[in-house]
Image (cartoon, rainbow, N blue to C red; front, top):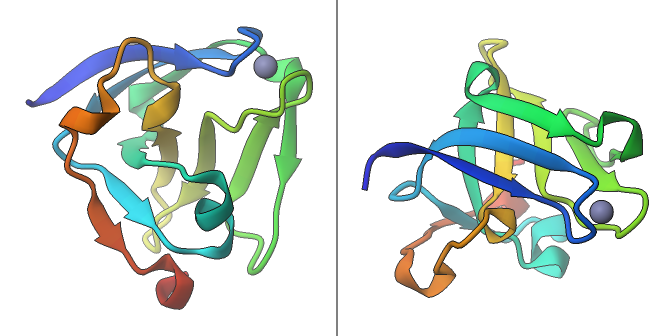
Length: 119
Ligand SMILES: [Zn+2]
């Protein structure tokens, strides 16, 4: 696979986005929130992510160092993406691959990311 544009969103459908991502590059993270959510994530620079609807439906949840905005839908509670920055300041979006449309998650090979110790 290579970078391709996918659509996705939350469970109730109020939050919708499109993102150009490479599904050969996914991670499973063991930080405190990913452990509970079971997210599989892929990264996109902010210019490759477009929120199509639901801006007003998003609630921001932050913890730990308050670097990452864990945005979830206020209606259905689904966190389909998060916003943050690389150490060099580049705006990034971490997309929850499980929230993309028509993705076979079992066909992916996520790399383990030790967020528990690195975030
Ligand atoms: Zn929703």
